[in-house]
Image 1 (cartoon, rainbow, N blue to C red):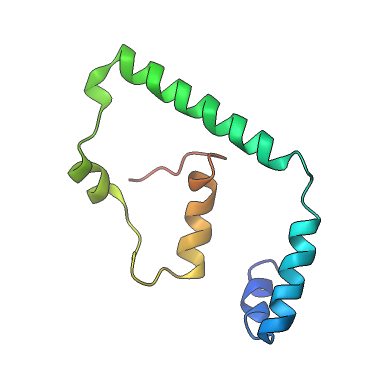
Image 2 (image 1 turned 60 degrees about the vertical axis):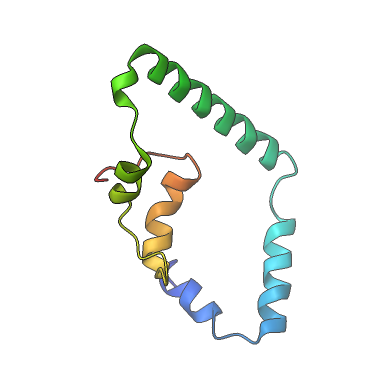
Length: 97
């Protein structure tokens, strides 16, 4: 089963089975994962702060930032969410805003 089809099929499981699966998946995450993610976010925030200090013209207004988001905030699809996850978790930069 492909990773694209897998998540959709999981939504059809009864709630109790989905919760049990989520628990098992969470238990499989290495204990130091959160520390690694927190450090990556701190490093990224520092990099962005230094970038803005060096060139204040890069700053976006709230309106410009919100205009650049291209997802349906009321009902995002799985594809929309997974398309933005690498960007949201700092694992890459999604181009095209």
